Length: 190
Image (cartoon, rainbow, N blue to C red; front, side, top):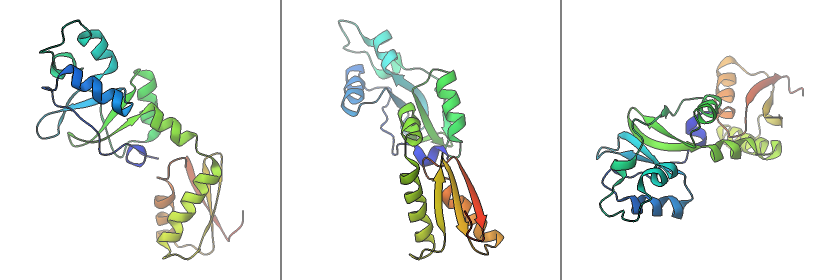
């Protein structure tokens, strides 16, 4: 599972000129803990968190205080192909709650701790159903393969699968949120 599979996209972002009160209103209305701060070309230049607002913007007079005055810069970011396990380690070890996901330097989404926990919390049954749906779509609506998921491992039962089809099945099943590993079981055995 990779960042692009679990990220919230598009990300709600702010520019540095946004007043602190406006950023606070966005955080509250969307239930977020942080907002990526971008320039006019949507390139990441920082992040503004609840802590930034409380530490720097919580004063009696906030008129004239903008996000650019209180944001954390530079911000930690990762690409869409980053493994979820790497993101989890960074979020925990660095005490980050929200990680911008970038394509080059442009923000394309965010991954939060909640996104990762949501993926972990999916039942094997719901994960198996989604993997099966994806595989059936790939097979033009027919049921060529069957899937079982146990503790996040997706086992795809298939008869006579060539290397190209096996690579396709692994590529299709792996990104489904909740899939931790994929194995092909040849001969339709379980």
